[in-house]
Amino acid sequence: MNHVLAQSLFLSILIWCCTYTRCDSFQSFPSVATTSRTKYMSPTSTSVEKELRVQQKRPNDCHIKIRNHGQQYSMTNDGFYLEDSFETPDYYGKQYFATCIPGLASTLANELINIGASNVEISGSSGVIFYSSSDDDVDIGMKAVMYVRTAHRIMELISTSSPSYYDGVIVNSRDSLYSFIQSNTPVQSLLGDGKGGLLTLSVNVILNGKVPKDLCHSHYTALTVKNALVDLVRDLRDDGIRPDVDIDDPDVPLMVVLKGNGGSNDNNRGYDYNDRNDRRRRDDFDENVVDVSFYRVLHAGGSSLHRRGYRSSSAIHKAAMKESMAAGLLLEAGWDKLCQAAREKDGLPAVLVDPMAGSGTFCVEAALIASDYAPGLMRMRCYDSNSNSNSKSGENANKWNPHHIPPVLRWKDSKKDYWKKLVIEARDRAASGMDWINEKNPEYPDLTNCVILANEMNGSAADLATSNIVKAGFEKYISLNEGDCINWDIESSVIPGRTIVVSNPPWGLRLTEDVEESWLS
Image (cartoon, rainbow, N blue to C red; front, side, top):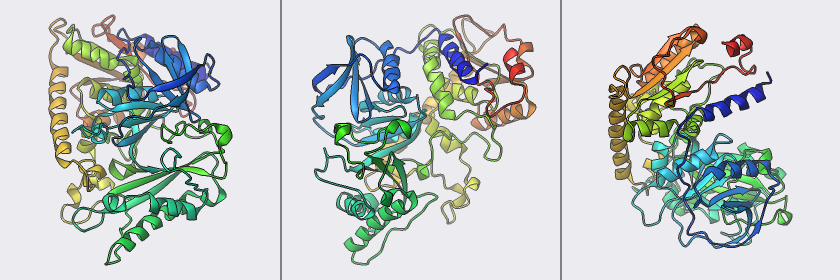
């Protein structure tokens, strides 16, 4: 069977198996008023058409916005539209950008809306723009780091060369990039520690599309940005001290995205980092100029948030699914809704079955969702300081946990009390959720409220799954059987209409042995 066809078929079955399909509404956009629009029945971009059609299942009052190639499409009850002009929001709180695996942008957007993000906008197939409220005590960036399951990176916008922000700014060389960074960076609030000292930094660069030759080397472009910042700090201080660079655990991980105007997002990373107000027509682009988006990353070292920490650092299944992918598929299949119904509505058990569990990623992520265990809390719990030989020095080096004290908490303008409140709340929610999972179900006394069943035939993979399940703390909640799934007897635990079957079987790419036998089983 062709592996692509097989994967598409399987994912279709995965979604179909769920009784509780997703029905939570997308947030409307009251502060973004459309002044004119053109009926758009056949989007030229396949990714746009696919994304819009996925959103057709949303309630009738939804107004979905999706960015592609610098243009914005929307869908209402009477069809697809290409938006022509906009009024910008009446206010600007902090603007953030979150990235994810291509295809999960709508799932990520849903998560952000559910935790209270404002003006959420899908950007390409793997990016989401969102805002905090300017008069809100909630730090939506911190909350996203703690609770969002499908994001890989969460960043706060510092500045952008978008013409809607800075008229006439042209960045086409290292010199002009240096000037832009120095002119548009609030360096005192960015790198000052509030006590007269300086925070450490790192700079990474992403090149998106066709960029000028002088900027096409990401390492030297990053050095240009770093030099612009440290030179600016040195000039502002009487003592001439410059901030230090820390590539392992910087206080301020910085990300610079250069979007080449002559390139296409679809041929690169699948998201558009530019601000929502950049509405230039593609014909007006100068391929020798780049748009610059300058961010600071909220979480530890700028590393990907898909890493929860429960996987062994020394041995990983060669065909393992990323944790964020597993969580996203479970959310799209409605596992969270099934668990919510079991906990708050009908009281019947929620059952999940994985006949080819591999290293157990689906099952652990299902347990995290069922127990309302925040992924940020899991990263704190599972972090192994010994895995980072360059952790903070000093007498507390072995206790240093960059997930417990992420970069966003070290900034001059951070809401430290709010983070403490988030951690306490997350711990209470996780404790309550894990108690609920293990309680006997009143309607099915032989079962608990949430049943997660896993099977794996390969002994080495089963050992990995056991290790991951134990490290995550779910050994009492996930049942793992080692053997051929064709002989696996789970009939007494499967409840019609309450069971979701998930699996990541071999597609013949990373795993090439016993593919046919696995599918037959």
